[in-house]
Length: 545
Image (cartoon, rainbow, N blue to C red):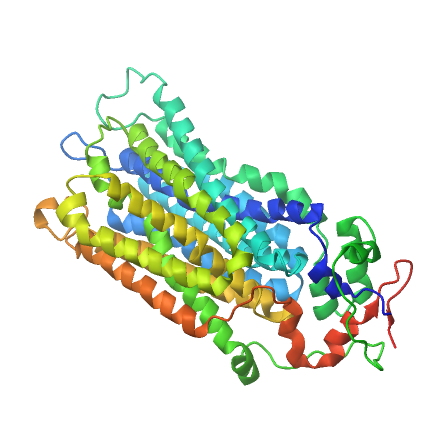
């Protein structure tokens, strides 16, 4: 009977302690991502009140162009990070660039807080520069975290593990909102200096408050840097891309803290048919590249499916998350907000409520069901439910909910957030990490993620401008007349329907599928050599004959 196989052992191994450790280590990048990208909404309230004068004793408001730049610039950086770090992850290894992405997030988060000088133009320029760098680091973390988790996991629970990594975003939103509320409360209780003029304009200390909020986003990333550096390269990359099977075995034994022979004996794996003869030398890799016709023929459909689905879901998801202040306009209008701290507190409070009530439960429902129901069914269901919610909210907003809130207004957005995180927002992160060859996996995930952030840019910036009221009486400077909330939400609902249709026709199911199934087109010589290699824990790998 042949000995246990390297990659077969990974596919069938029982859940180990290291799997949970990897979830936390990889998830901290997603945690920092959500913290930094979503805390900007309440911070814009503080910056607007500090650097712009309001009319008729009201708080200052950021011009629409400044809001668009503040939201769009880090997302543009994320596009760059997805593409560059995704390519580097396949070119020089996942582990070698993993810590670099994290340190870039740490450096840029601190840099955002140290945005030099206090003039309006200088502050906004330096803040935009550091948030662009932050976006590059965040973008780099996406393909690396997903790929590393997928290559460490077994095929039975791989979807749940990747979903658990992605679910850290929910906690990032919650912690970011909590930090914002705490900082605003502390600074609001500082007595105003007698030299400070009375009125809605915040005191000078408020310029420190938003900087503290941004800089605290570096803490979780700093805490996990050491552990990222201690992670070995994934066995799948080492064996399939670097052709170093003995090193792959040693790395996995280090990860699991015991020999793979012991792990295989505990698993439910069965011996696979052994080859009659195989060479001890790893064969040459296929010669075609990412931009070749052969890649397009064999992987173009899968890349199109993963990229377009992620693009469409983020047109919806980032729109709703980053621009909640517009959707909840009626709730904001009836609140008494005597100063900028209260305004920022209220935005953060709404984000925290949604995170607790629907976002985090949605993420963990995905962890529970993703490997039971399958990626495709859950993704189609999520797109359709999001569309229904958007159609109902949009249809009733102008005539009913814009003027008076009721229970239905809170239930429908809550359902939308729940099902978006249960299904398409999570599945679109998982599927690209399961569809492609090891030597293209990180790159293709990066390309899909770059398409996602382009969707986020179009959704957030476009929706921000388009959702301004279509009634001239409701327009206040610096905003202009646009198509209104009703039409914007109806368009987003249509985007969800398109996402469901494209998922049905183009997205393949990856539930329970081995990652090595993606390698079969290179011929049996390479994969079967690795699969049929006996593990000798005290010496080199020998081919079974």
